[in-house]
Amino acid sequence: MSVLPWAAVAAWVATAAVAGGAARDARRRAAAQHRLTRMRPRPAAPAGEPGTGRAPWDALAGRVGQMLASPARRRIWQARLGQAGWTGTPEGFLGRVALLSTAAAGLALLLFGAWRVPWPRAGVGAGVVGVLVAVLLPVHLRTLAERRRALLLQELPDVFDFLAVSMAAGLTFDATLAHVVPQLEGVAQAELKRVLDDMRVGMTRREALDALAGRTGLLELERLAALVAQAETLGRGLSEALRAEAARMRGARLLAARTRAGRLPVRMTFPIVLFLFPALYVILLGPALLDLLHAVGGHP
Image (cartoon, rainbow, N blue to C red; front, side, top):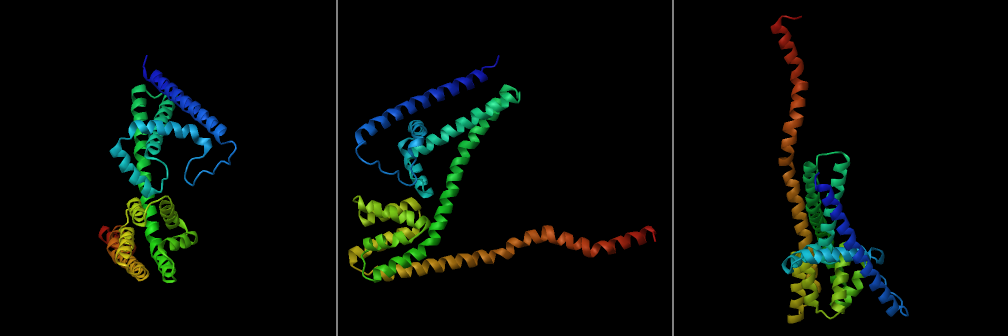
């Protein structure tokens, strides 16, 4: 008798036991916190953070992620998650990936068993499914990060113009951020709001802007941090520099659009040769070729 069914059952029992222990610990912590803070209103969970209903799942994911995340891996994933807009911890993300891939492999193993697939093949197939899930989730995270960076890069010229206009009116950089951030939308608003929050908890402007550039990986935000530091050191006006940077970004975006448009004729050559020309040859030369075949063959 194969040991794979019993191994699958044992894995599910172990996972359920760990989840039950995490859920029990989470309930105990929640009860203790409620007793300590029942006389105070409970603050709302910040945007992007998991709610109280998912505390057992978060505790289990964090516990699994702590076993997988070394300090070096944690720094790498912290940067990747920041670029994708993830506000949780690297341990939580790695734990979620491990749990989801394990659950997918177990579900695939059960389905293969229900379909009466031989157990060696079922085990290999379940392992392939788990590996695919573990690989596709980071790939999806990278896609989200690239899309988010593209949206932020598209919004930055307008943001720089808003900052320049507000600073030209006499506001300081901190007051300008506080004035501009509520009027923005999308990725730029979330990132600049985080800059404001960092400055309110004690970080300097340069440190908060450097953290922003490190999270997003955009050279334009590194230039913004350098411009702010130069303005603080040399006492230069920041409004004109921001306007010039916004104009430069728009010019670079227009140049990139023209470059992509210039590549279109070359890219259209292959579809035209492969799909349009054969159909055109059949329409134009087909009747003449049929007449020639009839004449050579002696048919009327």
